[in-house]
Amino acid sequence: MLNIVLFGPPGAGKGTQSQKLIARYNLVHLSTGDLLRAQIAQGTELGLRAKKLMDEGLLVPDEVVIGMINSALNDNKQAAGFIFDGFPRTVPQAASLDALLSQHDTKVSCMVALEVAEEELVTRLLERGKTSGRPDDQNEEKIRKRVTVYNTETAQVAGYYAQQQKFHALNGIGAIDDIFGQICGIIDRQQPAPSESSRQATDEVKA
Image (cartoon, rainbow, N blue to C red; front, side, top):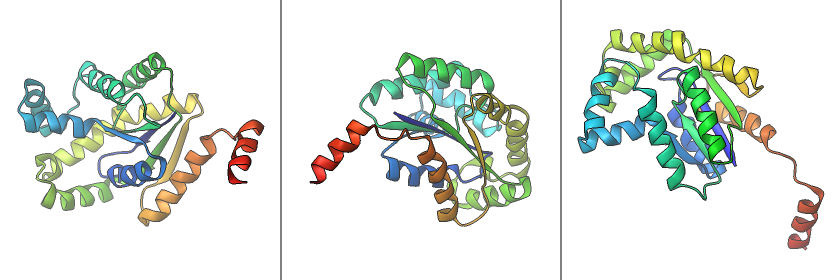
């Protein structure tokens, strides 16, 4: 199973690259932001609680997020793999994700981080805010707070995956397709080479 953690500050382009990766590798997209916004749209107690925190640029409690991830894994047992977008955000979450994936007999394959300077992030998010309708995309102070939260808390997750030799950083500024090609290059190197028996079977099918 191919499990990718796509990482980067808000506005780095994770959503755009996620959709391209999903199409190429047939992955299930697990975006905690999307899951939370679905709860908000439904007006659930969790959604109302999450909305208040998200509007302030703060993080949602770990146990809530892990619970949603577990439900998603259970709902997609036959998936070829998952792409985790915007999660894990902290080292404890990364450790919890490892433990959760282990329970499902799988693990994180690699972490790809998109690196973008703060001023570029602010510009991108303010532009996105014109159409997204999200309050935290329309206020520069809140945007900078989100970036600060990322830099002080979330960026430490890079070190966690670096210790496992799974961390890969890329420049998130450039042509979308060029960045996508670089990400695919990283992912493809994580895939195990086919065994001799698998190659023979493939050759027989082609014949």
